[in-house]
Image 1 (cartoon, rainbow, N blue to C red):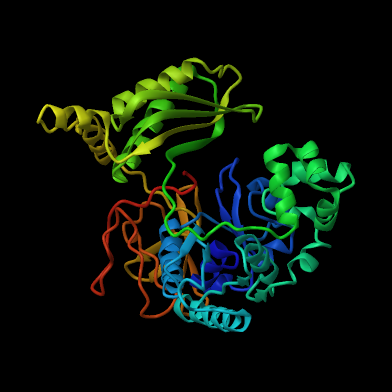
Image 2: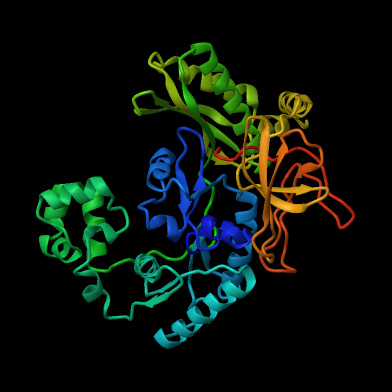
Length: 460
């Protein structure tokens, strides 16, 4: 998909079409998730610090991500792909590999091109958005072709032409060659894919190590026999938070780690999983990142066990200068727990839900502050559906428009105005599936729903 998050926002907001749109975390330490092609003209790109993006494009629209909305569109696209083949390997919400031959959708270059052309048309018809298609005989080359096709295009790399196409291109086009590896190769006089092939496998192993060297040489020769894997097992479950202000208080750091451990366990249980390796991630004030782990005797989903393990790991980390990011994860996943095995052996049922239930009850009972993330959907009792342009100083500014309306009018309200309520996103195509945001009551034709506002985005 082309500039997926930003394109989805432009499609749902008529006033932003053709304008620079930047989606990401809007706090002091936020980063750009996606920039529209108009914003990219100012030099803004994904993973750029949001502060730098604001300097480059001060007049762009800055929006908080609506992940449930993007996920609903992604499912529509993935459904189209699965109709082509049983072998679809999603890489993210907006990208996937598809084995066309496995589904009988293509058997040569011409049939592949026809299938790709129809797929692009179907994506536009179903979602209102554009996607780019790369067609080739391997995953690596299909990925490169799709990047070459952007935006809104199709590129086919015909069998037998791979080496000629790759040769003159920068080494950075190859998967796994980032800035550091690229600079290292450049200092050795290697700047193109053809020069990687000419250097030979032994020289590459000497330059970048055994595993990376072998892989680089194979890619330079256009060798990639990785299959498309339809189901990819989850390897870990984790949560992390980045803080707008460094945390120096050790007690606060401990409390944050405990809170993250509880969130991680809820996500773990929600997936029906348990794990035996507890991982703590700490990014300090100087951007140095430390990872510590502890492996238990068996898999668990007990929040108390995960909290205690995370606390032990924290004891071994120096946080004196301040902490900017904390994360807790669980790996070594299984679909059972050590406690389950003991319970089955004793002929008992073991349930330990009290800690999690109590934590959820505390969260539900806490007073909810009315929060208005930029770009999120709202509904006003008098003016109808709109989206938040911005908020602050007790005021929230809303533009009232829908995906199939003309650019709408802007009005400002008090943040506590009860006539204004969070709303579900509207479908981009009339009659298409809508999105129900967790924690909200669906709106009906008879009035607006009310309920908790969605959590602020920006957390993983």
